[in-house]
Image 1 (cartoon, rainbow, N blue to C red):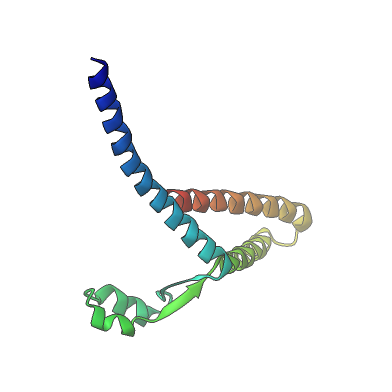
Image 2 (image 1 turned 90 degrees about the horizontal axis):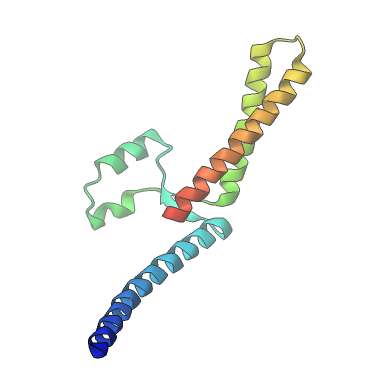
Amino acid sequence: MEQIELIKNSLKTRQGGQHMSRETAIKTTLERDRREYEEMGIEVPDILNGKRLKYFREWNGELRYIQNIKMRKISAKDKEQCESKASQMDVRDKRVELGETDVKSKTESLEDETKTENVVGQQVLSQVMETG
Protein backbone atom coordinates (compact mmCIF):
# COMPACT_ATOMS: atom_id res chain seq x y z
CA MET A 1 0.00 0.00 0.00
CA GLU A 2 2.80 2.38 0.82
CA GLN A 3 4.38 1.78 -2.59
CA ILE A 4 1.10 2.61 -4.35
CA GLU A 5 0.89 5.87 -2.39
CA LEU A 6 4.48 6.72 -3.28
CA ILE A 7 3.78 6.11 -6.97
CA LYS A 8 0.61 8.23 -6.86
CA ASN A 9 2.47 11.06 -5.13
CA SER A 10 5.32 10.95 -7.63
CA LEU A 11 2.84 11.11 -10.53
CA LYS A 12 1.11 14.09 -8.96
CA THR A 13 4.37 15.99 -8.56
CA ARG A 14 5.35 15.27 -12.15
CA GLN A 15 2.04 16.54 -13.49
CA GLY A 16 2.16 19.49 -11.17
CA GLY A 17 5.69 20.21 -12.35
CA GLN A 18 4.52 20.34 -15.96
CA HIS A 19 1.80 22.80 -15.04
CA MET A 20 4.16 24.82 -12.94
CA SER A 21 6.67 25.20 -15.76
CA ARG A 22 3.88 26.32 -18.10
CA GLU A 23 2.60 28.74 -15.49
CA THR A 24 6.12 30.07 -14.95
CA ALA A 25 6.55 30.60 -18.69
CA ILE A 26 3.27 32.52 -18.87
CA LYS A 27 4.17 34.69 -15.87
CA THR A 28 7.62 35.37 -17.31
CA THR A 29 6.14 36.39 -20.66
CA LEU A 30 3.58 38.68 -19.04
CA GLU A 31 6.23 40.31 -16.88
CA ARG A 32 8.53 40.82 -19.88
CA ASP A 33 5.68 42.37 -21.90
CA ARG A 34 4.65 44.62 -19.01
CA ARG A 35 8.27 45.78 -18.53
CA GLU A 36 8.62 46.47 -22.27
CA TYR A 37 5.35 48.47 -22.26
CA GLU A 38 6.43 50.53 -19.26
CA GLU A 39 10.02 51.18 -20.37
CA MET A 40 10.28 51.27 -24.16
CA GLY A 41 6.74 50.87 -25.40
CA ILE A 42 5.16 48.28 -27.67
CA GLU A 43 4.04 48.43 -31.27
CA VAL A 44 0.37 47.92 -32.01
CA PRO A 45 -1.69 48.42 -35.17
CA ASP A 46 -2.58 52.10 -35.63
CA ILE A 47 -6.36 52.03 -35.49
CA LEU A 48 -6.79 55.72 -34.71
CA ASN A 49 -6.83 56.58 -38.41
CA GLY A 50 -10.10 55.56 -40.12
CA LYS A 51 -8.44 54.22 -43.28
CA ARG A 52 -5.92 52.19 -41.30
CA LEU A 53 -8.64 50.78 -39.05
CA LYS A 54 -10.67 49.75 -42.09
CA TYR A 55 -7.65 48.05 -43.70
CA PHE A 56 -6.84 46.24 -40.43
CA ARG A 57 -10.42 44.99 -40.07
CA GLU A 58 -10.52 43.77 -43.66
CA TRP A 59 -7.10 42.09 -43.44
CA ASN A 60 -7.52 38.34 -43.83
CA GLY A 61 -4.46 37.41 -41.77
CA GLU A 62 -2.12 36.63 -44.67
CA LEU A 63 1.46 37.33 -43.64
CA ARG A 64 2.42 38.86 -46.97
CA TYR A 65 0.04 41.78 -46.29
CA ILE A 66 1.21 42.44 -42.75
CA GLN A 67 3.74 44.96 -44.04
CA ASN A 68 0.82 47.16 -45.15
CA ILE A 69 -0.48 47.49 -41.61
CA LYS A 70 0.82 50.70 -40.09
CA MET A 71 2.02 50.36 -36.53
CA ARG A 72 2.11 52.81 -33.65
CA LYS A 73 4.35 52.66 -30.58
CA ILE A 74 2.58 53.11 -27.24
CA SER A 75 3.94 53.10 -23.72
CA ALA A 76 2.89 53.70 -20.14
CA LYS A 77 4.13 57.30 -20.51
CA ASP A 78 1.63 57.85 -23.35
CA LYS A 79 -1.17 56.52 -21.15
CA GLU A 80 -0.25 58.90 -18.33
CA GLN A 81 -0.12 61.88 -20.72
CA CYS A 82 -3.51 60.98 -22.22
CA GLU A 83 -5.09 60.61 -18.79
CA SER A 84 -3.67 63.95 -17.70
CA LYS A 85 -4.95 65.72 -20.82
CA ALA A 86 -8.33 64.00 -20.55
CA SER A 87 -8.78 65.00 -16.93
CA GLN A 88 -7.81 68.59 -17.74
CA MET A 89 -10.33 68.65 -20.59
CA ASP A 90 -13.04 67.13 -18.37
CA VAL A 91 -12.49 69.79 -15.72
CA ARG A 92 -12.57 72.57 -18.32
CA ASP A 93 -15.74 71.18 -19.88
CA LYS A 94 -17.44 70.91 -16.50
CA ARG A 95 -16.39 74.47 -15.66
CA VAL A 96 -18.13 75.70 -18.79
CA GLU A 97 -21.24 73.71 -17.92
CA LEU A 98 -21.32 75.26 -14.44
CA GLY A 99 -21.07 78.81 -15.69
CA GLU A 100 -19.30 81.50 -13.73
CA THR A 101 -21.08 81.01 -10.37
CA ASP A 102 -19.05 79.37 -7.64
CA VAL A 103 -16.66 77.87 -10.17
CA LYS A 104 -13.72 77.45 -7.81
CA SER A 105 -15.39 75.23 -5.19
CA LYS A 106 -17.25 73.17 -7.77
CA THR A 107 -14.09 72.82 -9.87
CA GLU A 108 -12.16 71.49 -6.88
CA SER A 109 -14.79 68.82 -6.26
CA LEU A 110 -14.79 67.93 -9.98
CA GLU A 111 -11.01 67.59 -9.90
CA ASP A 112 -11.35 65.23 -6.93
CA GLU A 113 -13.94 63.18 -8.86
CA THR A 114 -11.63 63.06 -11.89
CA LYS A 115 -8.70 61.89 -9.75
CA THR A 116 -10.90 59.14 -8.31
CA GLU A 117 -11.99 58.10 -11.81
CA ASN A 118 -8.34 57.97 -12.93
CA VAL A 119 -7.38 55.80 -9.95
CA VAL A 120 -10.23 53.41 -10.70
CA GLY A 121 -9.22 53.32 -14.38
CA GLN A 122 -5.62 52.53 -13.44
CA GLN A 123 -6.79 49.74 -11.12
CA VAL A 124 -8.87 48.21 -13.91
CA LEU A 125 -5.94 48.44 -16.31
CA SER A 126 -3.66 46.80 -13.74
CA GLN A 127 -6.14 43.94 -13.29
CA VAL A 128 -6.35 43.45 -17.06
CA MET A 129 -2.57 43.41 -17.35
CA GLU A 130 -2.32 40.90 -14.47
CA THR A 131 -4.88 38.51 -15.96
CA GLY A 132 -3.31 38.92 -19.39
